[in-house]
Image (cartoon, rainbow, N blue to C red; front, side, top):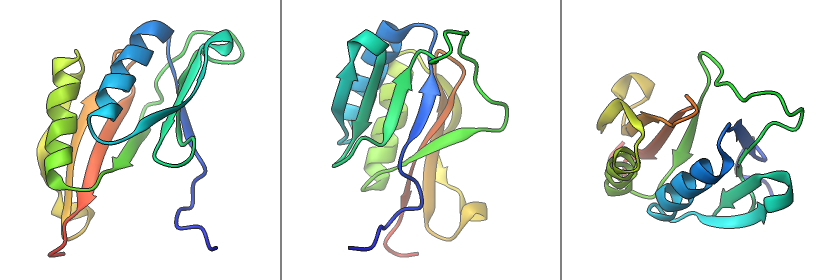
Length: 133
């Protein structure tokens, strides 16, 4: 079977594993993603639909985690309503708004997305391509 994606997985670092674990478990669970692996001994947790796709953990080199300027990660969700849910849930969990849900036609016709900043400074998005695009 041919792969439908160009990425295997992505990882972001955290300086507070337990806080990040609670945040992403609640946030990603609200939009249909599950915990795939929880490696307590390594302070890393992974989420996905069928495979481990998004990792959150303390850096392997034991240095403080930092967010990359210009880097963001986007989750593809199944509806515009789930983009709305993602954004509202993230804000309720303490994230910072970085772009309310709405069309982003400059990314392509039918693109609907929302952006947040997590407690470690990572810019995270949820997006959906609408059917009428």
